[in-house]
Image (cartoon, rainbow, N blue to C red):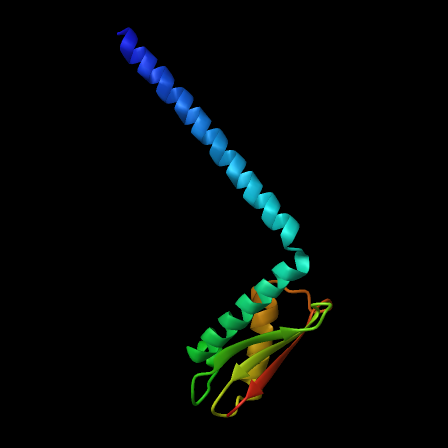
Length: 127
C-alpha cells in the first residue's frame, strides 16, 4: 500500500511541476507578444481581417452586393504613422457604389475600427 501512495505523490508532484512550467510558458509568450506588437500593429491586423471578410461577403452576394466576377483582396499599404491605409482589391468588372459602401462599412464595423483615427481607402484595380 505504501508503494501505491508514493506513486500517487510522485504523480501529483510531476503534475504540479508540469502545470507550473505551462503557466510560465504562457506568461512568457503573452509578455513577449505584448511588448513587441503595439496597438497600431494589432489594428493593422484587424483591418486586414476586416478587408478579407468584406471581400468574402461580397463574393458570396451578402446583403444584395453583386459583382459580375469575384473580387480578390490583393493586400494593403500604409504610411509611417500606420493611420492612412490603402486596401487593394482586384476586380474584372466595375463595382457599384452600394458594394463599395458595403466593403468600407464592413472593414470598419466588423473589427470595431475607429474611423476618426484610421483613414482606410479601398483602391480597385481592373486589369
